[in-house]
Length: 440
Image (cartoon, rainbow, N blue to C red; front, side):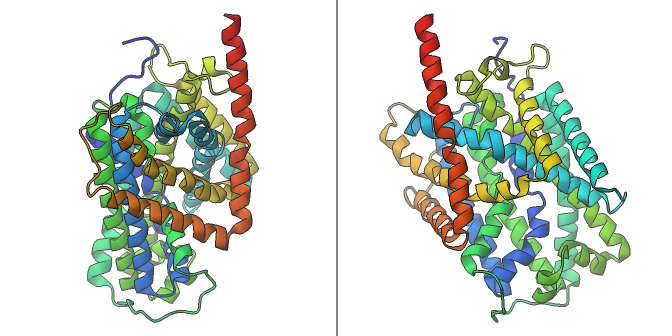
């Protein structure tokens, strides 16, 4: 093993835990009211969760074949670069490195501390300092060893499922509301498309495991298996949680509540239920933040190896003792600190949900490019029901993008503008690298 080669220590169980842990964060606890409000009825709300899940699953099944054919650290960034050209991979890497991953890390850090004020009241400054402290703890653990980050992911994934299982079990058994009507509500939302957008945010994170192909013991087998098992499990969990919620609270109460999970826990378990569910949410957010730190750093690491970032020599280094991408980890968390302090990351995260689905859709389309070049790529996994599964992912992605443009036009164009800022940087770095090679 060379001194700059990542250590392959991540097992199949840990890979599945990364998928489930990266997806299940605060979304399932905070999004149901928004989804039901926009959908207009309980059953249409449930349908939005199912359709959003199937679009995610179709995309995951498809990109899993691409990942198995190109099992390299960097994930979708690498796939787009190889199949479409350098600039497309760079643009995704630019978005993920500078905004998406650090903003998401910051959002989860602040969410974690916000929930912790239920137990320990803090003012605004104290919350920001505490958020940075928790993030730095996870940074330190991921620097020490990828194995530590993976173990944290497994334990937090198990921990976050405990309150979810409790809500599902007791909600289905003890619930008395049984609100599953098709009656349309008076809503302020924009309908089913926007409701589905809410679910896609809750499903976001499924692709993170592909960033770690260079550290999986058997990436060709582990990536498809972890994506399929992980996404299917989350779809089932999300649907059951929402059914349990509707079984306990009328839809109007779910929509009007700031945190329906806490209300439901109180009804099912008494006053101690709120403590139980808040603790569970904290574990959930903690695990998701760890997954974002662990997988997010692999993008700038992969880009730096290809001299596609400033200070690439520093960012591409692997720690000589711990064998982890230490400098890339520090970069992502340093940017996240800025977002925590300024608090401006919320808008950026919302904008880039739209931008990310542009690249996700391109990733699904890339299966056709891959199949045309199949002589160059060999894989033991093939997406089932080809080409229908990829077409579901593509049509779903286009539908998501269309709904966003129609209903959030200004934000959509702002998001595209942020992405396009990567173009001048790409061509500057390309020209600089060419000049340096000519001097050698």
